[in-house]
Image (cartoon, rainbow, N blue to C red):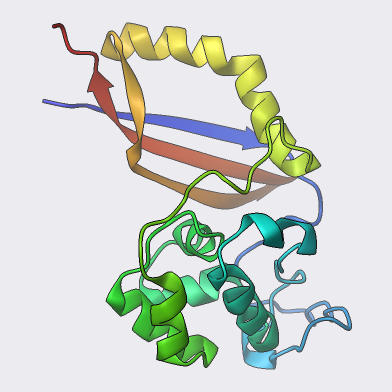
Length: 203
């Protein structure tokens, strides 16, 4: 019977990291002129938008989804609540790294005011994963995740092998989530990776 492996990666991130919508006792920060604030959905920080230099490497659905997200001033967490999916899974869908179900398209059409015909046309078919990311990554925040594997990759491998034997952690039977922790030393990012353990087969 397959086991489940868990890896938690706490690290300090830059102040521009996207955080979930939360009730605040203070007035939220005003978004830049590129955003159109919606008071009931306002996040503490500006929402994530699409970098123009990524567009040539992304599917047509990405600009469509991100533009609608920007107009509504919605975080991925807010959209995820409407879809009944985790915010990271929703972000992956926006970047073309995940497949949208018919139900996803219906709910996206409703929450983002995108014609369902447009979504069915642009989101149908299988994702072409991995095309958007250059290796090594140039974005500092993405590179820091790459750096974590550079620093701790073999340590993870050794400990995982001792706990589970000869195999790998699946990135397909897989989930991940991002949490924000705060203490007297500041804000901390907690990234959890959860993948099914796949033993190597003898043949």
